[in-house]
Length: 108
Image (cartoon, rainbow, N blue to C red; front, top):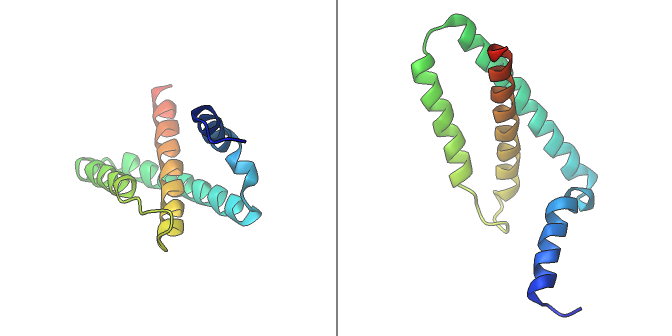
């Protein structure tokens, strides 16, 4: 198959939608565990600070700063720290999910 623009776009969409199925069991399990760990950690963290009602003005910017640092310090995929960064990124995704779910619980 020739490397046309359409085939490149098709390959990118294929990797985006079905790339999870091509990875190894080790990668899948570490990704799922990191997401669940981030959810568990931040769900408990958020409920603790909501129930106390103090230091909210300090903790919210610190949480936002940590999340932004994880996003902006993405190393190249050939770097030796890339795999560790992926684990932190999946933990961040779980944390954001916990934050959104907690907001829905408080809103209802």
